[in-house]
Length: 263
Image (tube, rainbow, N blue to C red; front, side, top):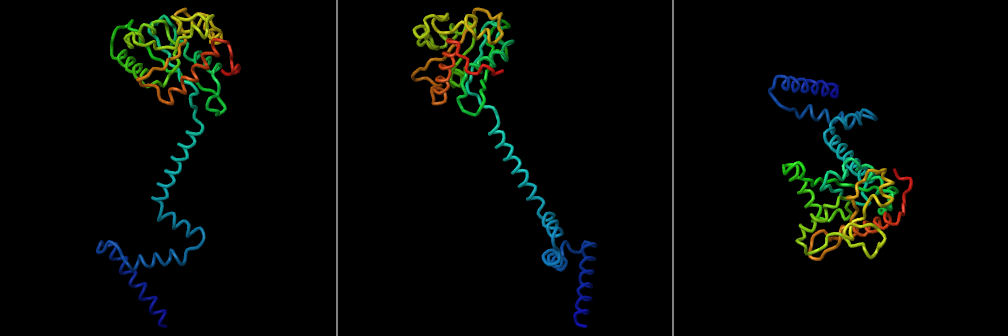
């Protein structure tokens, strides 16, 4: 009898608390909250208990899920994205060079001569194009291109250049005649046709054939940046890029294609 009376009294208290909540007399009820907790921890079983847990923890669970997905995506991108085995600067100082229209073929052809330096199973060469031609006058675009070029020169990210002959005059001006910016290959490759002993004339090599560049003008050459003391662009990354550039340059001069099927 006592248990039945207690149950009825408890129901009455719950009804009063519920009424107070509906009328706005109280914002929360310890009695109802206690009952809810009791049901949650004692009466719910199986999937009902799981559903209850998910409902009451949905915000932190959503945050954790989004964070996990973000970390997973970044990790996947890091593992699978293409990394450049070699960085190359394609520079136009004269629009007659025709470099811009052949960028895709140039990139693919460099990859034929480039080993898989990072050992990830494929070869990728990154070609960064910069137009320094002043044929259209000096404007905002040309200022931007000059800034990009200066950044490349002083960081040393690209140690191999494919460019027209005007680059030699430009680099001599930047160096004030104190240094020769590109490697002198005259002793190493006495039979190669070089611009001022530095740049390999592309249309005299197999490179032009591999790039399907029959119209390549005789002003386009491939150069490797030299190393200078007391100058930026000589960190370990630049030194490794220079080592790779010299090997690829040798492959081009000697016609040594290491990736014949690379397209």
